[in-house]
Length: 311
Image (tube, rainbow, N blue to C red):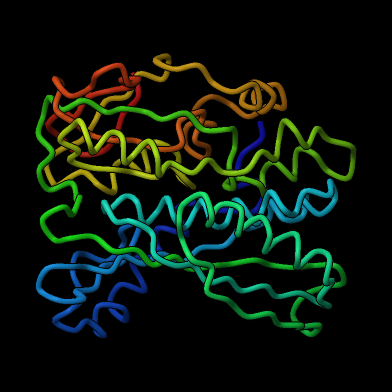
């Protein structure tokens, strides 16, 4: 049986880390800091009418396979799309993006591929790539190792903020398709691939940007919550935006999964682990009243209780 834990990553430890950091982070709060710690994006009051939304993330170990396959441009796109998608969960429009690349020794071609990939997505989103930082750290990174991280800042009017507080039992959960694995769970994927050949077109398609989908949905529906499905799967991420006392039930057969998840199952990743670690074909979720679902894919419903269940 292949699991994320056996590959070296513990989702439980990640959750415990958030809890440990909570006191330090919350001790820095000012009157302008809005909302609870642990959301997809932090909120900061720009003035009485507008809020800034900010999110920082990294590509992670997908970079290792992308470098082997000559697909670093795709991981640059991963980074920008991931950070922008996080900001979108608040209802914000992306304003600007900053990146950080670190390596044992900077390879100019690799750096260009990463930044050009991020720029592709930023242009699509109308988000300015303001600049960033590059660092050579031979004492930290081994030969040929590199890392790529970034921050997106967006803006939302207070009256258009989406924070999940208006969710009600009976609301439906809409699912928006992923391109595949996106950028989470690659420590496990790398353990399955090992040093052998692999299908980059199957494993490495970049993270989908959901800006157009969110804009279109907001134009026609009462959007009450938005969740970006990253590490922790649908259950772990949808639970982050539901208010206390509400959970959800998801039908895992309500959508068609991309072929990569069949490949993961063939490598010995069991269904419960697939759902716990990966997006399984749904990269973004929205919660709306039942009458606002339209022709979108309904994957579940909000119900009384705590947590998100499948079945």
